[in-house]
Length: 235
Ligand SMILES: C[S@@+](CC[C@H](N)C(=O)[O-])C[C@H]1O[C@@H](n2cnc3c(N)ncnc32)[C@H](O)[C@@H]1O
Image 1 (cartoon, rainbow, N blue to C red):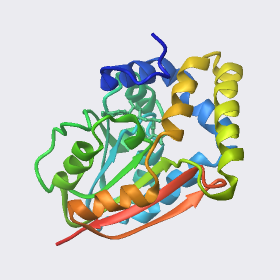
Image 2 (cartoon, rainbow, N blue to C red; image 1 turned 180 degrees about the vertical axis):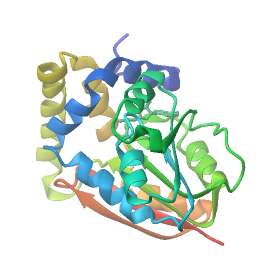
Image 3 (spheres, rainbow, N blue to C red; image 1 turned 90 degrees about the vertical axis):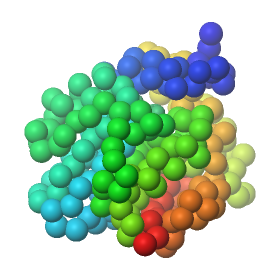
């Protein structure tokens, strides 16, 4: 089966992809974003701004880039990095500063945390990988304290007059880089198709508002191909 087709069980298909690409994930990210990914992760960490001594969750932490940036920025906070890929977590645990983060195996569709456990939630590139967006956002709303902030880094489907050019660019460049850097064209064909098919920031903002978030905003990055969104859970 080709993984760029819509899988019947998207969760286990996505899990398989991340288990497979964990070893070259950071390198590919660097190449695809021309080194900007780490900077965006630092911005995500800066925007979540938990109170001193607060609890922070980095969901879909992967190799832990956002969780580690948050742990560095907020030395008094307790940072939990959660992901359902054991291989991605294994890589995260080997990085400098990893002992400052609690690494936890968790599925974003059924979080193993009590209601209102966290002062802030961050996540990078989770939402376009899940089939039930509503459940995943609901779970985050449940575990976030009232007044807590959520900051999301995501890819963004091209829009406006540059859309045809950007569509072509994403379709062509991403799988090609996957082939050249990782020798894995099929996993990165999945990335290309999930990016182009994903919701716009406006649609995500609408969903967040319906769930009870306020003060919603976003800023696009890198010719509109990536976006950082933020929102606060109403008190
Ligand atoms: C593209 S990586 C992003 C990693 C990291 N946040 C970053 O910005 O580099 C997406 C991560 O989401 C995780 N993921 C996808 N679906 C998930 C789910 N249902 N529950 C938990 N993690 C999930 C994958 O295992 C993978 O590590």
